[in-house]
Length: 117
Image 1 (spheres, rainbow, N blue to C red):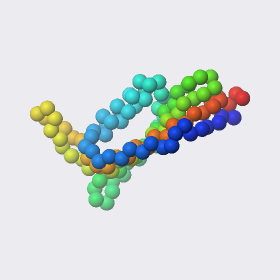
Image 2 (cartoon, helix red, strand yellow):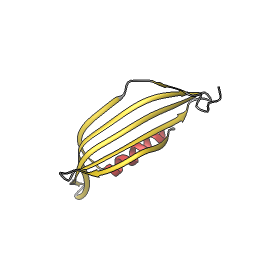
Image 3 (tube, rainbow, N blue to C red):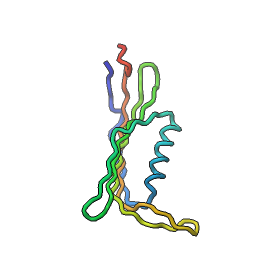
Image 4 (cartoon, one colour):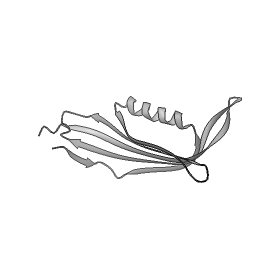
């Protein structure tokens, strides 16, 4: 039976910023892939709040095999409450989002991931 152990306490990053959600999503997925992690999207939700803001939340589980007996797992929980804005970039305008972003990372090891022992 697999045994799961948390490696570190959760790391939480909160920031108010202007960003492109689609670019952020692609960049994070690419970064995990570059480090050898396979990403599973556990949930993805979008809602519009009463004041017209958009709430976006998704949960990823990124895992990679460390050895025959250990799998490394990083859970990333993303939540953003944003409004659409237009920003100028290189003499052109593009759409972006501005608001509060919260990222929570939790790292685990899973021993005997195939339940062979």
